[in-house]
Length: 54
Image: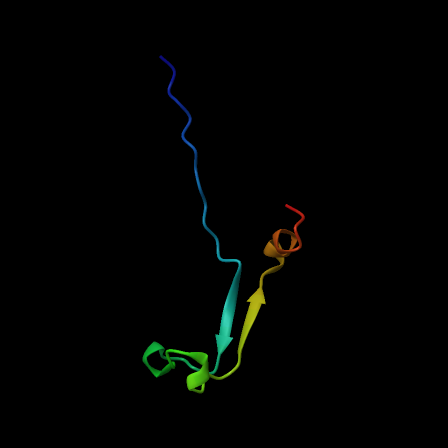
């Protein structure tokens, strides 16, 4: 009997979130509570998927 090939899954980050808040307990629960702006930086490897190309 042949061994069955298992499906594999690899998880990789697609970007990072940048914020002036560095500790989770310092973050407000809601944006309306005075949260600072944040930036989402997407890695180049993920941009085709975000553009609908995949």
